[in-house]
Image 1 (cartoon, rainbow, N blue to C red):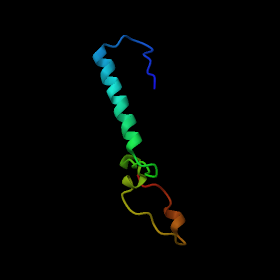
Image 2: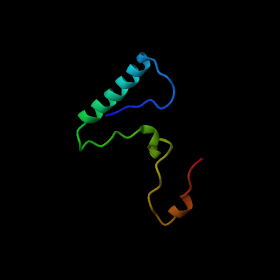
Image 3: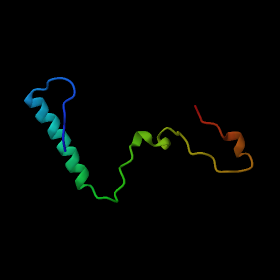
Image 4: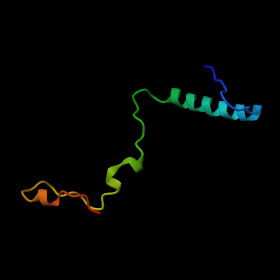
Length: 69
């Protein structure tokens, strides 16, 4: 693995800190099992913004198919 500084002139301490982060991320990715899916973020879950359960399908369900505001 080769890392190249494109812009700027980092100090040796800054370069060492950046390399430590890259190495730690690579080690964590290598240690993760292959079949394990990534954890889903709670912010991306649409059910967190639904204040009430959606109605079950019924003959009049089409009248209630709006997003509550």
